[in-house]
Amino acid sequence: MRVATCLIISLALYSTDLLADTAACPRELERAAEAAIPKAADWPALHQAFLRYRNCDDGAIAESFSDRVTVLLVTQWDDLSQLGQLLSADNSFADFVMRHIDETTDPKHLERISMSARTRGCAGLTDTTCTNIRTKAEAAERRLRAMPK
Image (cartoon, rainbow, N blue to C red; front, side):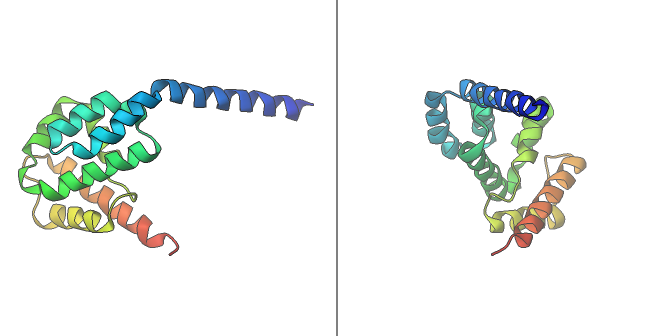
């Protein structure tokens, strides 16, 4: 009886969490995020998307955010000063960027990011941020290599 009661309470709490997540990101906002995130062409645009859609940062939306973070790192490596300014001004955006350097992205992007951080440095970012970016990219690469094919 005690186990059944615990199970019922756990399921109720889990269901409440699911409803709360849905309420935090209503379907209309989710659709808008799906359309807007891939269009973020620079760091300020991605920061605006983060501010607007951060409550939707799960599943396919999270993968889209990860794709944008790594694409921007690859394509705008020579001008990381915009990113550096945003990271300095918004710690939650800094956490977001680091969280989205992950194994859901293109492995070639991860390789280019870690190589660039190692060989070219990160002008416009602190040394700690540069090291964190490299470490996150390398860890994601290792996780990808460890996955069964």
